[in-house]
Length: 386
Length: 160
Image (cartoon, rainbow over all chains, first blue to last red; front, top):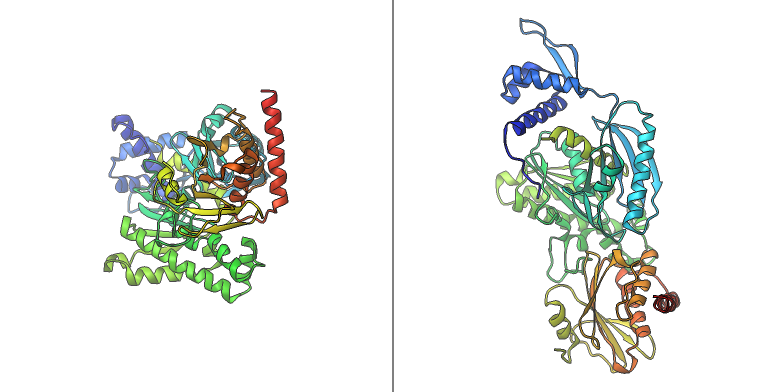
């Protein structure tokens, strides 16, 4: 669990600073008066905080606003130029790295194949990519931090990858290693939780203090955001919706249980079942091609998966009752009709009238999203830092 | 305490919950089949019962050996001298490099005493791991891996 800082005056000042910065990002351009109204802070407090943010080159004053009779207010907005964060998607051996600005725009992008067998080799491969991205800025502007998105189980507090299944690596102290090598704060997070972090800052999670992000692709995962923060859980497995069991006698899952959502509706499971129908379909690429070509069996397989994911979403609503459910990942991109199935199920079968109106939305997903999400982890730290 | 029923023995060792799979190999033909609890096992068959896990931890229990051997998949390169299981680490390392090592599992090997050798156990474990991963890898390649693992293990022990 994330440690709570003692709520003293230092904490309060830091909290207010993060709050003001967040409001400027969400409502820019905005005046000091409006900030004071929204935060319920005094005008001098807001002015002090804004002064600090301007000095730190995070905020700048822009054109004059519309006057209500008095002096025209000066509007504030984020400094978009030359304020960078680095994001690296290290979920597979194919690393994707980006330099992004504080608004989530890509400034520079690099792709590389990481070759590693041990913890040290993995860390060194990430260091090399970080260095390449830092060099690409040509020492112009400020880098605020490095975010790394990895698959598997992560302790975001210590920045240790507890287990990365695809790499067969345990206990990789990546944050510590990178912070020894670079003078920037480093943030390590599980890939799905990083995607949720991106939505929280730049996407459909902006201004929504409670939502659940569900990822569906080869596997199925999720992330829970409460009070604008990612919830990690005591043992870092909050949101593992893919291992929600739906069938006592269902197919065996890689986790050693039967009938998990992922074993029923993840694309790997669809491929397993499809091979029995058509042995020529051996890879996910084959299966996805069949779907895009309009193969009726493939369409039926994805439709059935949609029914199961719908049940998973419904169970999630009953368990944590989020304001919004965000659906992201290649499955929804390939078969958007699944989103309609889920919406229909929620609208007709959730427990109460109000819960039937839970906002279910699809969010865009692409291969680059992982790196941008990793960058968002570093951006998030600027807006959330206490 | 081991019983006649492999599935009961397995559950006594690793607990009763979870999805256990049973792979039986005919030691005369080398043919491997998957069977369910209650299915008849012939005297020519040796069995491996396994429950997958997802944390990169492998546990092996052999019917003829006391205790449980635990190996983490991130530590396969460490050549610990564990009663002849250097070979098993080498084999698993080869499978990891080939991308066909599963994420973890609890294995119970039931092998008839007369054929219970390290070579035979290696072969059995390799074939079960391949079955779990559902990868189209031929028996010849598995045999090759096992031979290499035995040789490498021999060399490592010799110069340890």
